[in-house]
Image (cartoon, rainbow, N blue to C red):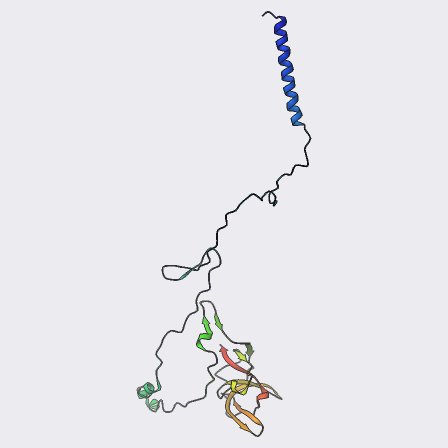
Amino acid sequence: MKITKKLVAVMLMMVFALGAAAGAIGANLTAPINDDVAVPVPGDSASLADVSVEEKPIDNTPKVDEDNEPVCPEVPVCPEPKPQTVPEYDEITMQEVQNLDFSVFGPEYSRFPDVIPERDSPGDYIKEWEIHVYPDKVVIDVDQPILAAFADTNSMDPVFDAQHNAIEVVPQRTSDIRVGDIVSYKTSHGSIIHRIKEIGQDEDGWYAIFQGDNNPVPDPGRIRFNQIQRKVVAFVY
């Protein structure tokens, strides 16, 4: 190969061109960082200003299956089940009882039901619609209830005993209690809970006579309304 002056000049021009290109690349790689340029940061409001998110409304309508039973939706939680209702039933009437022949059970039953006395029972203070029965609980609508326990005196056997509990309320007026109610009252010896056997009026005003269901005689004295403490509205056995 014959090297001429013209060839040497071309080769020198190529070397100079490659050196200039390398210098430009190096200058770009080592250029100082400009701190004045804002860099978007994830979560920064400035970086999300131009971001649009499609929002879909949440359907909170309760879902039901083919049996019209509630189905738990994804959002929110599954609705409360509906409480049970008292099934329909036909209660036997007193006329039907009187037409029954109890003598088939033995001669000692021949006078039934004439020998069954009518006794005073507590008032119907908690209505059926105030009792809500669920598969795992029972809810009773009672305003300002009080939980009560009892001493082992046997005076109210077999209605309740020492291991039982009751739900009580405070009567606000004399019309809140009636004959047959089980009521607690205070004495100088402590509180007593018995059944009201009689209600009357005398020169000192309203009074009640109490007696334990298992006691042979009434409680001594006339109990005034200011001695009344609480009235039982439910027993828990």
